Length: 347
Image 1 (cartoon, rainbow, N blue to C red):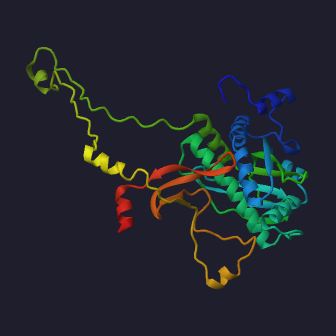
Image 2 (image 1 turned 90 degrees about the vertical axis):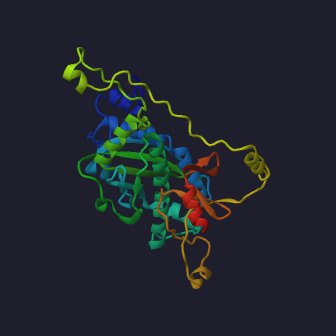
Image 3 (image 1 turned 45 degrees about the horizontal axis):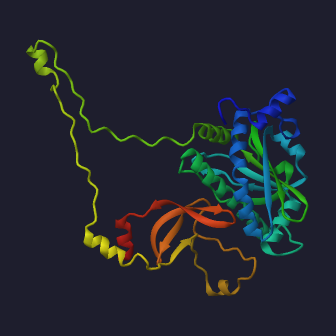
């Protein structure tokens, strides 16, 4: 947000004569927090749509969200009788309550697309699929939050989904922000997804978003400060610091390749090497592998949001985060493995 521009949420609040309206009439919480969340979440829906399309094999469009402040009673009043609640709390960075709510019909439609199965039931397998979808959404959000705030410690727990009566859904106490998304699964049927943030989580995220990425730490100056001796000499002059201190000039310590080294490197510049990105690994028994079929979900040894490994000829050289470029996946390099680590890997 700029210093003078009003967000859409703030404009709506002014037109309605009060705080930004919440589902079912709730009006608690911080309007500024809701506006900051809405701006950041709206910037992720394009990537979310592409990710969900890849996961389901359908043309999925996620739009919105509209973020407003609510409370338990107000939100429950707007929900269907039965909901699929996905607990996806943040465990680090901005730790606290965070969850998603879907209607039964929406959960069944998503699980059916991901499992390639019609007339699906919301059993343990379907709940696992919904949890996987929520994990993908949170992973994309963490990537965006890291870029906008500079906080690289953000992480979430493994999402847990359950189909429950709306009154049994776990919701934060007091007033909290709710992001309502519109979901199109390509069949023309409108769906909604509600994303709920705990009030402390929302406040910390909004504060970090408004502050922006932390500036890079400045390097200490190599120039020594001169302390002038008191006039008149004597004991004061003896005890004072040295005068006429000159700045110390250090030579630039950058290694320059010799002509022979540059020539040797040039000989292999056109050699192709295989670069792969490893999302994760797992071990399975042969009988488990033989029992795999379409729709089988394989749990890997990495959590959503963790860096992926970048390998060249099967040797780890860097780590990165998954991004979506147009309709293709990509990887943004976030860490280069040190030469010492690479040497130990080769040995």
